[in-house]
Length: 412
Image (cartoon, rainbow, N blue to C red; front, top):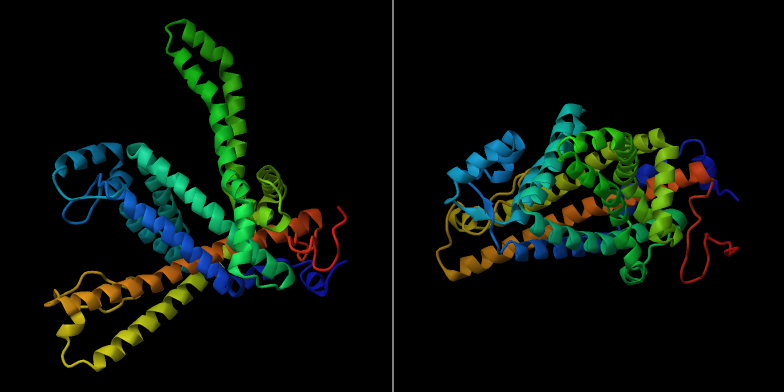
């Protein structure tokens, strides 16, 4: 039976996407995102005790050089600055990708498609650099990141699905139990397509080795090349489906309580059955998300600036303030570079806690962004499911009651 809400949005489903902001600011989702972010940052900082990234005195790193000049420019840069400052892989990736992300947001808001594309390509290039030149570090960190995303991402999707479907705002503990119970499925879902691609691509590596054989290798290469193209086509289908369908895997498990294989199958089905509708939803969400993030960042900047200015009004002279807290800027909410050093331990103590609380506030902003992403993907999944399978948006698996919808018992 269709609800009144579904009748209103039966032909125009996309207005549901504008519910993402209201749903994503729920405190349980923000807390889950902040907890996941904290775990990732702590893991990255711990791993960064091994500083292997070459950086010049002017702040340019080997990653910047690799993206702009390629491998040849990187080799020259490393050789030239080998004895300069070294830093960790995580901090290098964090600083680089955060700048590109803000470049993407700005480009989206001013409809600069080429700018968004350039920054996106550079972010992907950063991932390629990490795996190419710091493979074991990146592999370990990638597994940690996947585990955190699997746990906290599953929690956020579950909370968002319940709010979207039945208006229920579950507590963090209830959703965490659901996420931990299904942790393996959330963890395996994004890795299974990668594993399949590797298995299909392995014979092509062997074919490349065979091609190295003089004379016979050329003949065998020509004979097996059609099969190689067939394998490449299959890998392309899986890779494109995985890249786009990853956004739907977690919401599928959050809505249906399905296993990872059902989630993967369903995400591929929705992507390839309604590709243009999916693209439309993603583009619309990207514009809306960029606007929401800009608003949240502006609100945070105003909060920090007003706090800074009113505290400063109560001080006699500016020297003391500049020794504990630099003036906030919109694109740099907390500048850790103090214009004047602390003169005694009390100022160092105050500066430490100012820095700590500023990082908490900035972490909440980033957590909103994470929460918005998983919330928006959950809404997109629900809309595609309704469009393709005619399943109402309010039909969801409810663990505690054994129901699969807002009020109707499961027929299973």
